[in-house]
Image 1 (cartoon, each protein chain N blue to C red):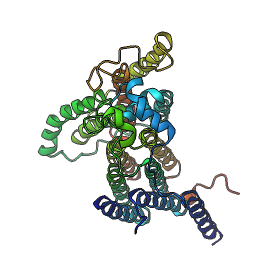
Image 2: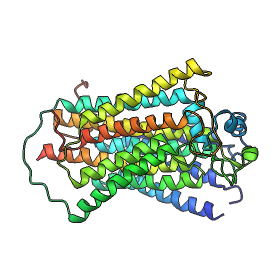
Image 3: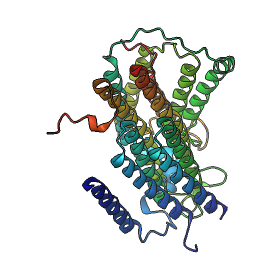
Image 4: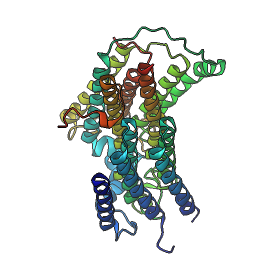
Length: 123
Length: 232
Length: 81
C-alpha cells in the first residue's frame, strides 16, 4: 500500500484492459464482438501512455494564474504523451468505422456474422 | 483445444512482457529533458498557454498533418465501400419522434455548434482544440439525425468544407517555409500578448481549419453509416 | 489520497465493464458496456492531469463510436428482415 500511487494503479488498469481486449479479439466468434475487443485494446494502450507521462503531484500542462511561466518546469506533467494520445483517439474512431464498414460488406456477402463461415481461403 | 492453449500461452507471454517492461516503474518525479524544454521555453517560442496545443500544432505539426490525412483516408474508404450498394426503397413506417426530442434538437443544435467553434478557437488558451471541437460538431449532427432520421445531409457541403480546410492547412504550412523558419512555423503573424485570444501567431487559424476538417470527416463517416441516407 | 481511492474504484469498474462487453451474448449490452469503459477512462485521464485527452475521449470514445456501432447494427438488422 505504501508504494501504490495513482500512476501505478492506472498503469495496471491499462495493462489489464489491453489483455482483456486481446482475449476478446482471439476468442470471440462474432465479428462485431471482435471490433469491440479491438476498441478496448485501443483504450488500454491510451491509458498506459498517459500514465507513463504523469509526474507526481503536478497539474495539467496549461499556463495560467496557477502556473506562472517562469516556474512551469516544476509544476506541470509531460505534455508530449498527451498530445500523442489526443491524436491517437481520433484515429481510433476512424479505424473502428473502417472495420465496421468491412463487417457490413462481409455480412452482405454471406448473410452471417460468424467468423467460422468465412473460410474461402481454407483448404 | 490446441487453439485455446495457444491463446493462453499468448496471453501469458503478454503478461510476462509487460511485467518486464514496467517492473521497475515507480512513477516519475521530474520531467525528462524534452518535456522540460517545452515547459521552459514553450511560451517564448510558440506563445500558446496550452502546451499540449503547442506540441500538437507547432512542435509536432507534421505528425498532425499525417494524422488528419489518415482520418481523411478512412472516411473516404468508408464512403467508397458503402456507396455501391443498392439503395433499398422500402418505405418503412418510422416511429414519429417525440415532441421533446424534436423541440430540444431545434434549440440545442445551434448552441452545440457554437460551443464546438468556441472550443477550437480557444484551443491555445484552454483545454480543447481542433480535434475536440470537430467531435462536438459531429455530435450536433448526430442530434439532428436522431430527431429527424429521414433528413438528408448534403454530402456536397461536407466535401467542400473538408477540401477547402485541408488545402488551407497545407498552404499555411508552406507559407511557414516561405516567410518563417520552416514548415508549419507559427511566427508568420506576431506572437501577440501571451494569454489573450489573438496570440500564438498562426495557431488559432490552423486549429480552426483542423477543427472544420475533422468535423467534416467525422460527419461524413456518420452520414455514410446512417441507414436512411441515400446511398446512390 | 482521495484521488488514489477514486482511481482504484474506477479501475475496477473499467475491468468489470470490459469483461461484460466481451462476455455478454447480447450485442446491444456489449456496445453500451464498451461505451461505459470509455466514459470511465475519461475520468481516469482527468485524474492523471490530462483534461485535453479527457475531453476527446468523452466526446469520441463514448459518444460517436457508440453511435457508429448502433448504426451498423441497425443496417445489419434491416438487411436481415
